[in-house]
Amino acid sequence: MHASRQESQESGGGAPAPDLEPLEDRISALPDGILRHVLGFLPADEAVKTCVLARHWRHQWRSVRRLRIVHSEKGPRRRSADDFVRFVNRLLLLRGPGVALDEFEVSGSVKVLETEIEEEIHIWIRHVLLCNVRVLIINLWTYLRPPLISQHLRRLELNYVDSHADCLDFATCPGLEVLDITHGCLSCLRILSQSVKHLRIISTCFANSIRACISMPGLISLQLNHFEGKAPLLEMPSLHTAFVRPDDLVDDCMKRGDYGGACCGICAYCCGTNDHRGRCVLLGGLSNAMYLELIAYRGTFIFKRDLKGCPTFSKLKTLLLNEWCVAICLSALVCVLEHSPVLEKLILQISQDAECKTEAEGRNHRQMERVPKLSERLKLVEIKCKNVGFRVCEIISFLSRFMQVNLKLVTRNSHLFSFED
Image: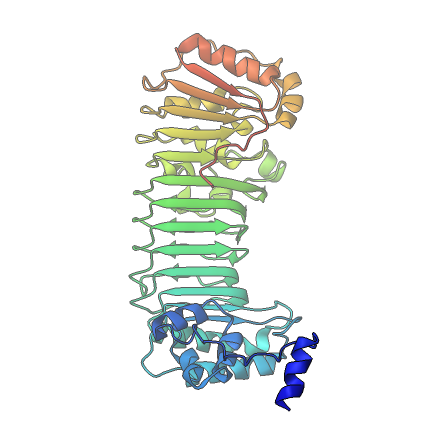
């Protein structure tokens, strides 16, 4: 036998395959804390499946501090609504006792997660709040039932969540610092928080019949982007940076013909309630910002109405505006500049469409003759546009009459500066 094997090797028959050594399981050798941290980035159903890998993995998923509950109508997480509810209930029940949660996210299909499991969703929310969750992300079409009660919640993200409570008060979450609302519907009279520092409301609809009041004394940054309905009244005395862009569907003025004419801008209908009559709705709450961006469509009414009682932007250093302030004449631009006594940098973003539409209009308006009182610190004006047309020339001509500034014209198709970034 030995001779035959030697002959086979010499004749080119090939050597026998060497014995294969078992692969070393280096992942399991990692500390348990690192393993649980890695499992937290997996959807919860995949994290649970790791229990079959080895004895050491059997209970790792029970101590994961970040749970991502994901449901879909398609793919590997396709389940009926009842199966999905049973899975989440057992998952929360079988987690290790006393294990706190850092983050909990529940996402699901709008078509599947309907009203028959609405109560289950709120039970899950109350349960994770009792587990001292710090980040709560709700990414499915549901209703928010206040109050949320937690001493540990720091960040709350609501996607496709509606709230029809009269008052959305986060006083029962004294540690909440970040509030993010996207694609929702807020039919509230008041939205209150003493602790929130960063607020993002994007593609969200406010009520058309009432004006909500957002009162957040400690707010530092605001992003109010593409909102519909009546613009909210802002009360934010500590605001530092703000980006505001109403949607073209903002319903914020009396329709022409109602009560015999166009809206006066300060009537009870426009302000929503008599308590808000005559107040600056958006600009009043932004008056303490140091960095401010106001973007709007040419026909947007809310900024023009607020300029009738324009507040003083006593801390404003950098301001970005688009063509709404120069659409017909330059009076809106001048009004904002006159009420910004420490302004250092002005950025005007003029689109090509605005040039085409406003050229004929601008020729019919007299240039302002009076000398505006502008900030002595304003030394830099940037005009960003693709083409130098009539409107840009008019702005340059006007500003150069009253102050010595450095005009920086950006005509290349580069990414425009925005606080939104």
